[in-house]
Structure formats: structure tokens, C-alpha cells
Image (tube, rainbow, N blue to C red; front, top):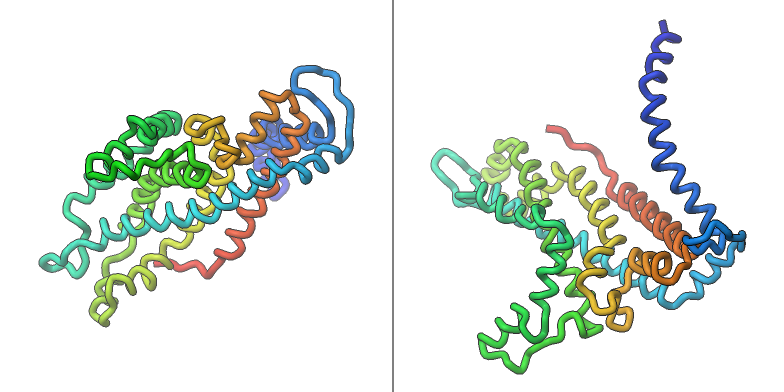
Length: 305
């Protein structure tokens, strides 16, 4: 019986595992191999150069600039996006005025608010980036027009043309386009938390801040941890927003250069596919390290209710 059971399981897993190996594992293995070559991406002729691409990568100033920008995105983007998502979700679900026979209540019309928050998810990232590119236009954009309308004619920043502002403008767009998804996600998690927990805490004298940190956050921790990994991976990407919005793209003066766009330019503009796969391997390693660190540091005893 046991032998038949294992044969049955293997029979079901064989095809999915084979597809996964061919379409997921195999490209990774090929990329690692090509990272040791001088392949141009256009010719079938190439030679193995050993660790030459890796030495070149570590000596490349633009690579380190890109890493620095990705690290900044990695620190700021998940923290701000998930923080805003948790705040808005908590306000929608628990932050309303107390009503008759209810110790806690959500905001009236919270369903409509969730639709509004989720709206950016309906738009593709290309459309979002293009819209904000127009909004950031220093001459006719919405932001500078608003500043001018309220009498701040002297304050007319060149949002995407200023190396000190450009990356922060990109991060603002990435936060705006993603925070609504996490509002809806966290709202779904909060709606499943029994109201009795909040009522008991409020009867014991807890305020809303204490109920958030003592009840809501611990019971949503698995969801928050998963969201942190996803937002971290997005922070390590950022290709579309940088490619569409920024000057250069990647500028000015490489102030918005990220690893994903640097990889793209090396592969498709400069014909250095071997070097580009080296950058891809580095990005893979950084992503795996980040995911491992988040899962390790965020590990805690599972709370059930």
C-alpha cells in the first residue's frame, strides 16, 4: 500500500516538477553559465572569461550606485507602503466612531474607500509612470501648477531633473501605486479578527494605539511579513518606473539608476549580455538574501484565533 501511495504521488508531481525545472530552474542555470562568458547576446560565438565579469562588476562605479539606490528603496519602500497600508486599513475597520451595541466600528462607507484606494491597481505601472511624468513636468505639470496657484511661484522644483529629488519622486510613485493593494489586503485580514478581542481590550482601558500594537499587528503578522517580502522584491526591481519616468533614463547623473535598468542597458544597448547576466546573478543573490533575512527576523510564534 505504501509503495502504491508513493508511486501515485510521484505520478502527479512528475509533470509539474518537469515543467518547473525546464522553465524556471534551467534559465537560472544558463544565466549563471553565461555570466562566466563574454557573450554579446547577438552572436552564438563566445568564450569563457572566468570571473572577469565579476571583477568588472565589483570595479564598476555605476554598479555600486545602482546597489545604493536599490538598498535605499529596500529600506524606505516597504516601510512606508506597508505602514500606510496598515494605518489606513486600521482606520477603515476599527477607527470609526462607536455605535450602538458596538464597542468598535469601521468608518461609514469603508467599502467605497477601499475601492478608491485600490484604484491604482487597475492601472498598469506604465500608465501610472506616464501620468506622474506629466505631473512632475517643471513647466506645465500639476505639482508646479498647484504651487504657482497658491502663490509659491518661487518654488518650482525640477522634480525629475534634480539629482537630489529624482529618486524620491520615483519612490513616491511606487508607494502611491501599491499602498491601495495592501489597504485591501490588510482590511480583509482585520475583518476576520473577532470583535470580542477589541471589546475586551477597550473594557480594560486600552486605547486604539494599544489595540493596534497588541491585537491587530500580532494577528496580522504573517500577512505583513509576506507583504514585506513582496515589497522588497519590488524595491529591488523598479525597472518600469525608472525606464519610463526618469531623464536618461536612469538620470540625471545616474541618480535614479537601479540594478534592473543597469542590467537592461548592458544587455540590450551595449551588447554585453554576459556582463548583464552577471548583474542578474548578483540581483538574484541579493533578493534571496533579503527574503531569507526577512523570514528569519520576522519569525515568531504563530497566533491563532
